[in-house]
Structure formats: structure tokens, C-alpha cells
Length: 142
Image (cartoon, rainbow, N blue to C red; front, top):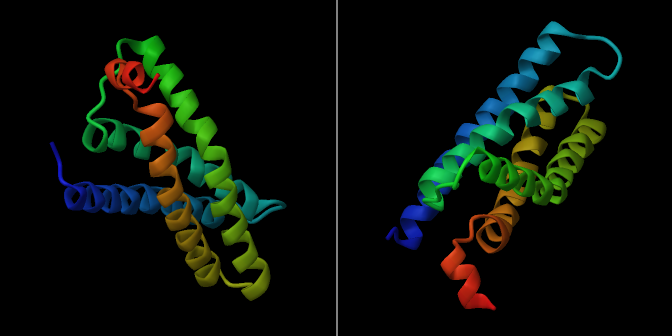
């Protein structure tokens, strides 16, 4: 069993990896596309990249969880994603607020990093309680 410190360090590492995937994707999209809604499209593309990366890393290394089959894993990913809507709103809201307030890419990315960090802290607690729950733990909670 992992200690709280180990979990925190791994979670931070995985958050950094998925943040890099997210923000890197955003930078690529903005570099390739300068048209209408470029920022919003880049944020959406970044989320579509970072989310599955984070799910796979956390499922295996943080929660040490194995899905029963592909259908079960799909349901878990759906629930994981659904619970992430609130935390994604925190991330997007913070990033877009920084973009509107400061008007620079650097500040937008800083806002994104702050929003992702706050969202990740909340998301860990939600996932621990509702997503990556073993049948024995769920049965003991009833």
C-alpha cells in the first residue's frame, strides 16, 4: 500500500504530465490555427488530450484499479469524465479569465495551470469516493 506522501508525489507527477499534454496541445492548436474561436478550440483540444492521459495514469498508479472488462472501463471513464465537468469548468474559467484580464498567452497558460491544479485537487477526492471504488469497499460502505 502506498503512503499518502507517495500518492501525493505520483499524483503531482501525473498532473504535471497531463498538464504538459494539455497545454502542449493548446500551443500546437494556436500555432496551427489563428481563426475564429482559436483559443476556445485549443482549450477543448487540450482537454481531449490531457483527460485520457490522466485517467490511465491515475487508474493504474494512484488507485491501483483494474477494470473488469472494456465495458466496465468505459463506464469508469464516463463517470471519471462526468465528474470532471465541474473541475474542468474551474480550469477553463480560470484560464479564460486570465486570458481576458491579461491578454497574453503566458498569462493564459498560467491561469490554465492554476485552474488545473485546483481542479485536480478536487478531482482526486471525487475519484477516490465515486469512481475507483472496489466492490468490497463499496459493499462495506452500505
